[in-house]
Length: 223
Image (tube, rainbow, N blue to C red):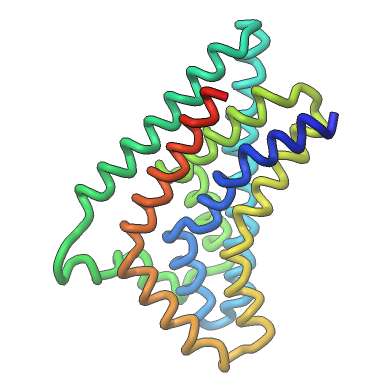
């Protein structure tokens, strides 16, 4: 049972890293962490994001497992994996072509600047939404779900794989929350510089993540 699990882990780990380095949730948690009671509200966003990732990956894993059972062949699953990968690469290219340029590129969205005073329940909802209503997040979650559902057939390893994927996906957004809780005001200038850098390069990061990990899925579909 655990040999297939190890194989699945090796396949979905790059996708989990892609989720972890997603720029928008990172910027959001940094903005929240820099506000009043930032650690508590940031923790709410992290929990919401974890649940959202579990829901997305779990849904695609269940659908993929059902698909394999109905088709009775791995060929169709490989085709689906390739289609998801090509879709991710295409989305990455579109993101790059449509990226803002000039002074507009350095202007953060208005919804981000309003997060300094967001409540903990709203932060939880935002974390969930960023994992379930974002096209890039859905693409990465779909890829992971296809890998997990197509390879693991028993509930315990499937649940463990989905939970592990989500845990890896929230590592980076958890770091600022822990840093603020431990270091308080001393860490805020450094976090603010990181936030500004991410805002300037968020579209580039998104493009690279989608193209790189989409190509990983396409490559895995031929294995």
